[in-house]
Length: 261
Image 1 (cartoon, rainbow, N blue to C red):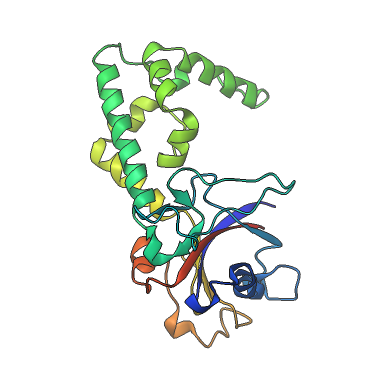
Image 2: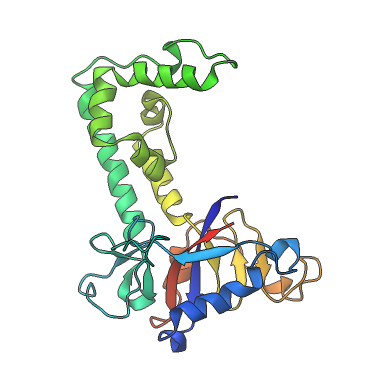
């Protein structure tokens, strides 16, 4: 069992009943309801994105708009306030749809700058794999020992103090040797950050298509992919949701949902 993120599109006329609208949109994909495998996706869901930075950036000047959506409380009732300038969703016209991508690319650019600065001050780090052997019998301990040795090198230590592994993983999908990462060049690194920022979730369209990040699309009214009568109109995941969301009318609601799968 795991979780998946999906950006759900909702019609403007349901803005006073967003949770009910989400439930209706997700219903054709609920697990253990006798649906075919293609639609057997989730068993619980919650609005999420503002508190963990995964959701949307707010258009400047709209920060206090009452139609913005924010995260539901945690399972134990603990509130989950949105980060500054972020939200879980709302009408398209209130959102800065490129904000997440711009932020990720900015962080990646800062990483490149810092690595260049540190490289001018410190000797190059030894490769990660030179810090001990890895045995199948003690795999996890050996990997942890390798990483500890690698991280003690001055250039690596200084870099991770500013951009820790978790941030590298979020922005660039990377937790490996930093020398190899930055050897790929600034252009490739920024392109990777932009691509990952645009691929962060599945998409549930207004007309009932659940489009997964791997490109598979399933319509909520059809039993199987083979028998789907909508296949001629099947959308594909564009790799970047921004153009699709930006083409929606300003009053259409988009919201980040985390599904337990």
